[in-house]
Image (tube, rainbow, N blue to C red; front, side):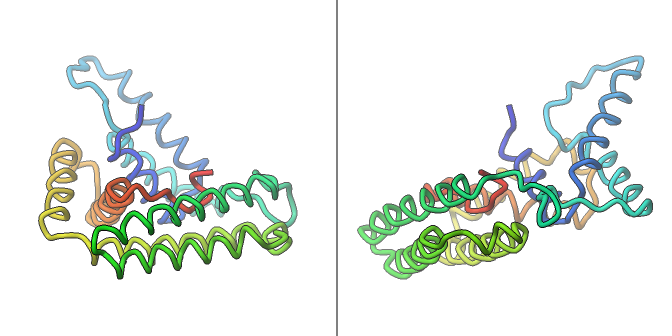
Length: 213
């Protein structure tokens, strides 16, 4: 049901640290206003329609002192078990090992090496007992996100100008109807997340963040 644009927008909200409660509240308010309109000629086919209300809800939450990362840690039960996390990380490590071998056959030795390095890093996490993230799940998420960003940079460097231009063309077309609902900073973040998502899809690389568990 969610398009690549929608996922990129969700990721941009996550990157900006918007509380989950604010995002859900903003979406609800956007649709409440939509259904109250006397004439609804235009269909809502993207979460971008809800962006302004989501940002308003996030601002209100910040002013009210509401903070939420979506990952309960330390003082409350985590949303994932240790076994679930270790299996997720191990599955990604194995998938990246296969991708590295495949890329190496296509004369992208540098990229293959970068992917293999990430696979090894994930393998070390999977081989641990998991005690470190039982007490600080957010720290693990920051670590995985940093690894993912490093991998995204490697994919961008290895990609042709034509491929990157094609992805930018996709996001430009997707945003045509929704630019007026988005601020400049949000558009920049959305474009970055969209291209990152398309790169990972193009190279058949799994996402590493616990956001995808």
